[in-house]
Length: 191
Image 1: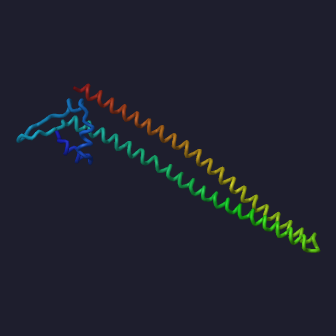
Image 2 (image 1 turned 120 degrees about the vertical axis):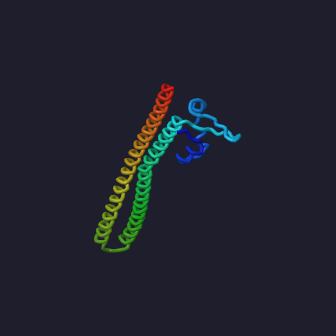
Image 3 (image 1 turned 180 degrees about the horizontal axis):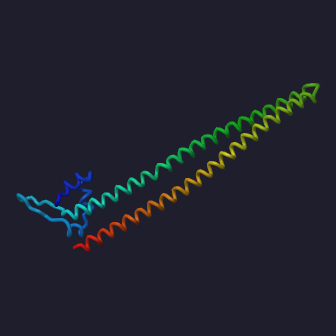
């Protein structure tokens, strides 16, 4: 059943301009007729032409859905990387604070050692406190290094996932073009 451009546009949920843009000269030659009623010319597309347009738009909708679904994991990875970066910044601040505290405690211990008579007892206590603080700093450094390593691994994985996505998108595009060419050959062969 032949349909007008407006009828097809309404059925497919696109504008008339979009339909006109898909109608190449070859398409018009094969499947478009001009009817005149009451002095008004109307373009009418044959049933085969309507089917060809529908297949074109089904292919474009599939590609658009495919692309949108592929971006979701990348957005999740970006959010996860952002959270890891914030965690690293927090650990780095703790490390800086611990180092400042250690330096302050070392200065205090040095003053106390110099000012007190039982130097060996005070020195031993401050040495123990210093070792505890150094152990904490070492722990924060290890945590920061581990977090940095995980971030690098996530970034590498995200880059590989993005390359795979683009490969799949290009491959889908090639298949889409191949389907269009085969559809055109099929319709040309029928005439």
